[in-house]
Amino acid sequence: MTQLHDVLIIGSGPAGYTAAIYLGRAGLHPLMITGSLAPGGQLVNTTEVENFPGFPEGILGPELMDRMREQAERFGLESIAEDVTRVERIDSMYRVHLSDDSTVDTRSIIVSTGSKFRTLDVPGERELSGHGVSYCATCDGFFFRNKPIVVVGGGDSAFEEALFLTRFGSSVTLIHRRDQFRASQIMVDRAKANPKLTLLTNTVVTAVHGSAAEAAPAKPRIGLTLAGNSPAAPAHVTSISTRNTQTGEEGTLDTNAVFVAIGHTPATDFLKPLVQTDDDGYIVVDGDSTRTNQPGIFAAGDCVDRTYRQAISAAGMGCRAALDAQHYLAQQQ
Ligand SMILES: Cc1cc2nc3c(=O)[nH]c(=O)nc-3n(C[C@H](O)[C@H](O)[C@H](O)COP(=O)(O)OP(=O)(O)OC[C@H]3O[C@@H](n4cnc5c(N)ncnc54)[C@H](O)[C@@H]3O)c2cc1C
Image 1 (tube, protein in one colour):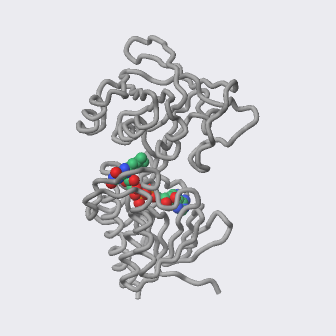
Image 2 (image 1 turned 90 degrees about the vertical axis):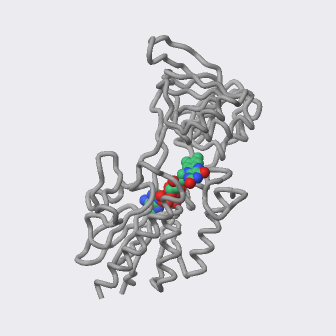
Image 3 (image 1 turned 90 degrees about the horizontal axis):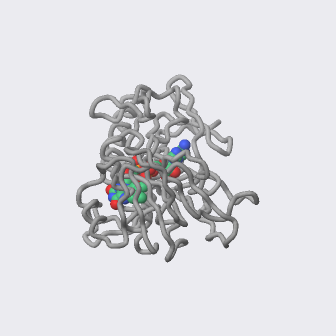
């Protein structure tokens, strides 16, 4: 007979690991499905994290996630490195389908699947993904030493990536479609003070161009690109086409890298239509709780939170989801 787990955690970011620590210490033996491509979540794609309490000198994102995993494992967390493809309700339990075609049965679930990067959807982007178009400055910045770099976006992530990339590029141009930035003022001020960084506002990228004439940069990490190496694909980015959103004027900018930092989409498709989401795919929870519309399914972190989207806020919500799940399981007995 298949084992029936008390609680399954889906996703291995700060929300998932925090939930695992609380559930492990409560003696509930959580099982985690980590995701196959990005175990550790979004923070494994960044460098210094300076705003997570307890680390006065800051800590590298991957190291912070390793520490969270170790802490959760100390309290008995077990993990499976697959993706969840579907969740099915069977009476008072759930059957969770994994990418290797296996299933896990559980009484309760904490969904902490975070969000995925958005794409520009312009000609050349997909073809040149992995050949100069990137979604992860930390992974791929190194490949563009002394090359001109473009970053697209206007939020904190875009500014963080642009500032980081000034360590590598000969120049970094941050392109934003409006003249106001969503990023915090301190990030904008830092960018303006950086002599390598240029801010190009009221501008959109309309195409990415590439050439096979020169050697391509090394292939970025698998899983962070949209397309693999294809024989027909141009070897590397050479320029982008732009359009001014105010005047309509078209332009061209020479660059060898385009880092896309225009936001995220919550990774919640696998829950539909069982669990209620809003129009953008964020999971809907009941008031201040982490309860979803399905009894025994709780949600935490960036897959719920469109506002704060920080490691500490995700971790805090993971704690609340664990306590909500404990309360639910106690009531079932
Ligand atoms: C470049 C960058 C820099 C950042 N810097 C900071 C910072 O300095 N400080 C800060 O506080 N925050 C920072 N953030 C934000 C922070 O990383 C997120 O707010 C936080 O990671 C969200 O945590 P989470 O647990 O909700 O989800 P995530 O960290 O997104 O983790 C989600 C997990 O779910 C898994 N998953 C997804 N779908 C499935 C599925 N179907 N089945 C199984 N698993 C699945 C993924 O593999 C992943 O492991 C940064 C983000 C980025 C992108």
